[in-house]
Amino acid sequence: MTRQQVKEILDRVLTWPPERQADLAEVARLMEAQDSSGLKLDEEQAAEVRRRLAETNPKTLSLAEFNEHLRRRYGI
Image (tube, rainbow, N blue to C red):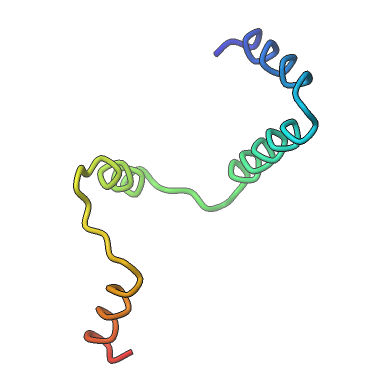
């Protein structure tokens, strides 16, 4: 995306209702906070996230199933 395209979008944003402008400002604030965070995935971790997101049929547990697993394994 070019700087000009970004400027065009930001100009349109100024025509939005104040609540929607505040929503976008919050998203931008969160992105900035994420960029300045010391928490980063290394390439191996990022690859694992991509692999798991690509799974067509991932194994997931409900909270009840997870709690039962913990109870059986650790007596919790």
